[in-house]
Length: 191
Image (tube, rainbow, N blue to C red; front, side, top):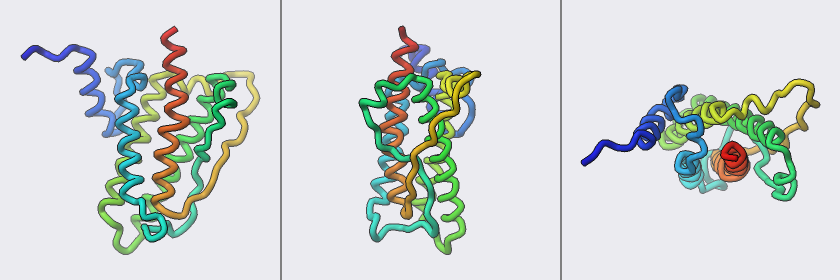
């Protein structure tokens, strides 16, 4: 057997380091543009959503948590500048990270937190950190605060009261706005 090609080796190494929340300095700068990377995080989010799919009877949060609204008006999204899309994605990722951390704290304060739920919360925290790092490498963070611009429109939000709804928002955000943004940013970068 031959030695794996260098890009494949870097991809595998990056996928091993990313879940640790470590910055992947040796990663190819456009790793997020490899659809397999984003699909891995989407699959983990969908798995968490499926585990908690008994929304009515499933574990409830002891307080409501604010999350980003994941609805996408595709006509409006396509007309947005990539900078506007970046702002919406960064704000959404930030709010989603806060929501998952808040859910983790609520779970830690419960009498007997289910281990499987704790596992998916931990995976979500790790995944969001990794995605944030990958978007930084893509250069998205620089797009959100260019000088001499008007402040961004406030992020649309909603509240959730169950872990199922929280993980559904997480899954929908990755499959929706994040995937749309990275697709467009990667296409523009390839030109």
